[in-house]
Length: 187
Image (cartoon, rainbow, N blue to C red):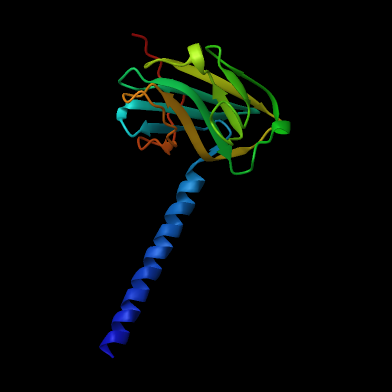
């Protein structure tokens, strides 16, 4: 009897834990959705911590998905690209046009060394962003979407302290759901 009672307790504990995990996953997926006029910021951290890091703010305005990205590394690490996917996939036919600053390319994926992502912006070679530098990519979508839910995002960090590169995934910024455009600092 004691054994069966303990099994029931363990089963209840596991069912509660499974429910909490499902709720957490569902909440996190929903929190990555952008409504019109809303911004969400993501941070990207290499295995070297702040020595290889970046952040990006995604904003949905009318038919434009604006991505402001910044190299926040504290070492001589470069930001070479950013890519992301949406839950309702953005296929090449959904992209009316795209532009990016600093000589970067903004296109429908895959490519740019970023894998199979819906939309990417990249500046490999001499167009990589040094620490403190930032850029903007604007993706003009057709038709206009009332909501874009980000499934995942990734950046390409090169010249890390071990002279290698990494592609860390973005995680929502713990300081809030969105903070608007990035602060631009020059040094």
